[in-house]
Length: 59
Image (cartoon, rainbow, N blue to C red; front, side, top):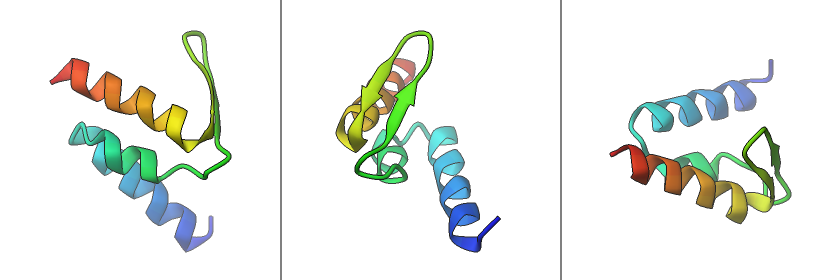
C-alpha cells in the first residue's frame, strides 16, 4: 500500500476514535461515493455530513 494511502487510513481511524467528523470528511476525495444499507451518498460534502451527524449523535 502506498504510504499516502496508509497515512490517510490512519488519519481516518484516529478521527473515528475521536468522533471527529470534520477530519473524517477531509479523508475523502471530492468525488467520493459511499454506499451501504442506510446511505447512498455522493461527494465529500454528503459523505462528510453523514460522518458529522453520526459522530454528533454518538457524543
